[in-house]
Image (cartoon, rainbow, N blue to C red; front, side, top):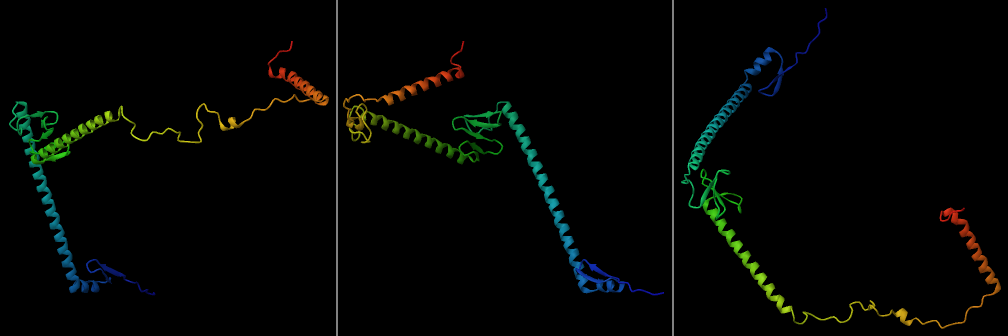
Length: 244
């Protein structure tokens, strides 16, 4: 019986990234080599580092969650104490006199300055800034806004006074400029004045009546008769008259 040669193929080494002969002797020789052993050691070291880094990240995440939960719990307890204190009428948490606690917003409000105060964080909110800031920045913004309002009111008063003083100076005095006595457009005719064409037009002198010949008179009569016939023929069609 005839025997055929069969190829054994190649085997891929994932550590060394090469192909080797797919037989036990070649595979064992390669695995016992220094290059393969070094690559296996590097792979195991890399896997160990990745595992340690992953465990460290998980521990940090768990620690951060615990801290967040602790802060949230502490803030919640503080909010409960403040709400109970405000319900009892205690204003010791207010930053000073003139501050009124608003139950709707949960902050202290000062109508004179328009600021809001958060007793939990200690920050102030200003409408002109649109954000929570420290006490120094909040009162500085209030002073700046008041100064701007004062300057604008002063400028408006000055402008109104200047306009009021300027009006009587013009009233009752000479016109503030050159008086134009002639029309701006010299080609425009004056109302009521005759046009140049009418002024230069001569009246036709009375002339004698034109003499009409007999042929012309007959032609005029024939044309008038034809016009009447056409009118008589078209009157019934237009519905203006009725035939009895």
